[in-house]
Image (cartoon, rainbow, N blue to C red; front, side):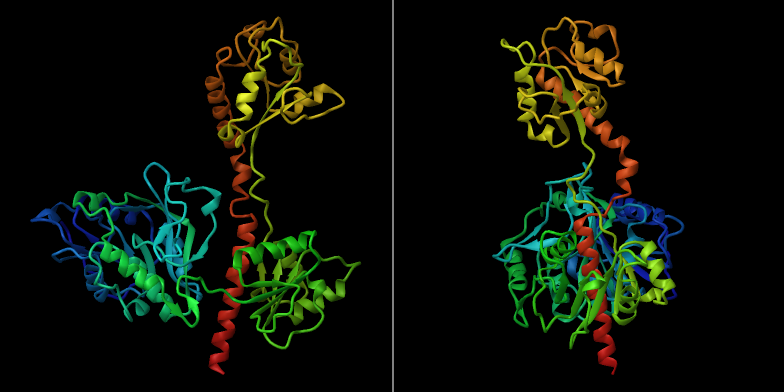
Length: 538
């Protein structure tokens, strides 16, 4: 094994505790392929048996050093190598983690933001299930990972950055000078040090802990702990975790994420600008809409037309949609110059503000996206009447409509009443055929069927069993009367349908109401932080 020491100070120190040659070798390879921005070093605390360290393979481009430490103790081992780190930023990373390309750089970009103190990332199991997207706490103080095991790692539910109470120790990035002021708690026996680190940080520093959704990695969680029989959290460790998580600091729970107090002035409920305000309020929890809020840190006007007079205290932010030279044009420009910060809904609006003399540094672009209910969905339609005896397959359609897994991805509609499906009514049935993705033929017995031929004439493929004239023409087949097989066909077609539209839907990634609210949270936090720093200097 080749060891290299980085003698000069570097930007990032990657710190890992390991006792498995295969794990550390895999991690080093992933780091090397990540093309980390700036200089970095990797320091390993080694707990492996015998001469097993000789089996570690170090890529030629990685500056690597190894320190043998026994017995294993996550906190002690990490504290030891952190004292020897030279980087301004520390990354504590598990050896059973494989970061995706770009993950480390995205975390670096996040931790360098002035309001961010610690960074965790999106971790997934090898089978694609979510493992980590932030750690939260129950009322009794015990921790849990949100959505762990429950959803896919790329689900919209975890696609937004989020300020969280704590993060897993599998990937923790933070400033070295801050870490050295308190370090990992070495009293834990098996686990809990990461929770204590997160919560202690929150007691000492004003910055918050950020989950970065776009930074992703595979985590082979507990592989090493299973090998050594350490899969459960001991009672004494859990008790120690709870002793941290139930603390009250300055009258607030330590596990409550701190956010600026925001007053929003906008139109009445029922209109889109009020909806914009509601989404921010729902996300932040520290917002009052169209109410007096003298202690507010931020006064936000959605939109600029509602601004008349600067409040006695607090920063003033205004939202700018479009510039209309025939309506409120003078106010658009005047408010933009008077407020402390401008939020533009598009780059085009930002350009108008800049042309009006507003500094680019005073403008943030926050676009409104679409609600998450708007997503690709395969639509299949049924044409024809129902008949006594069930030969038309009414029971098949009923079974499909009652399947929640299916209807989440497939929209089943009918041209007429009787199928218990939503009715799409068109003056011309040809428009119905052209509006759907596939015609569904649920029949068990047919002479034609005529709708099959009509759909084909309109250029619409049918999903149909081998009955009547169907075998003689192009179609998607399934066994007669087989609901399970039909469901399988529909789910496969739904996946293809979503994939075909992936190019377009990818353009909307992060553009939803949660993204709108999160970006405002981030902006308000930055503005309040900068104002606090400026005030302290005076």
